[in-house]
Image 1 (cartoon, rainbow, N blue to C red):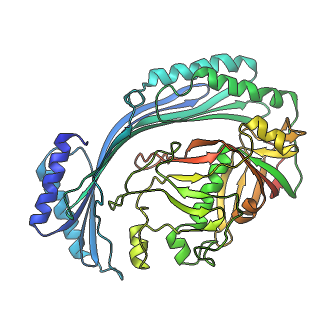
Image 2: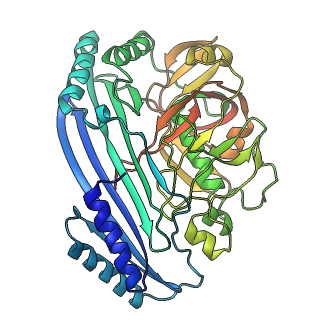
Length: 459
């Protein structure tokens, strides 16, 4: 449970709000974040911060007012002032054109199962040493420079309201490691990335082996310039996570669907959206994700299948959108969902996948992604790290920068294989407050007829 000193102060503030006959929500967030950033093969930045934030929302009828405090909570007077400002903002607010949903903790939650003290305490020295081992082992092999970052830390989230005496608390740790090798003359780039729930989940030897496994293809072959047409593409894990994110944002978000801006807006639950091979869920019970057990309106989160074997099952509604359009909220008042794309029947492993693909483009990462027309699910993004040509089931050459411009429904329609093994992929934002988010995704999918719209003469 939350530190007793802070918890007691917040519960006292809740009780004072009740005495003032205020409907109030209290959302507390505390993070301990450590980051090192690499540049020119050495540590260019090392930071640590501990931040506490409190969001207070007061609701009266169709009016609501909020106040956010970025500070350690040290006194009841501090919370009295925050509550008074939120109440004043509420009185001054314009009425909404719908009845907003007030936050109620449906079920008491005290969850620290995702917390690892060793990861929370992982030092910049330990991070630097691992990165140094990688640089020392690989840099002498060519004209290489290294960059990247390694973020780790802990997050505490606590929610109560005047609606009842139940409390919701969550504490977890997470880490995201990214290291980029850049060839200084030819300018191609390789990337190794890891998602952490606990300390010690990977070693320097793991990263060294990954780079050494890719280098021969890049060093012994010139860049391959592919042609502009529909081709077979084997998407790797980061690209699959991007495709899943695009499908969620463009197909399953309530506001997009209600405003007819989603590519699924012409459908209703029960209609076919994707081929039978595609099952998508928001599943906090999946071991690959960080598993948020409640949202910040107090809803208890459970597994929701939103696309079952290609059939549209459900649209996701945050409380504001649900209230406006008279729908039921789906536990989506948060910034860290737990989206999962189910695995298929194809053999596990990138090696097995490329042999299955035979002749294809391997695009493990999509960069500079944009969705110019969500109503069609149209997106565009370029290959960058680790992209290679697959010829006769083997990696044959590095791939020059190639742009995919297609629609999510079309890409999913072309699926011919999905790996049976799913992996965690950290998609946490590096901006705003720490909000650990991971997807569970197949390590590869193979799709036919993916549109390559542009090819560069360089990497």
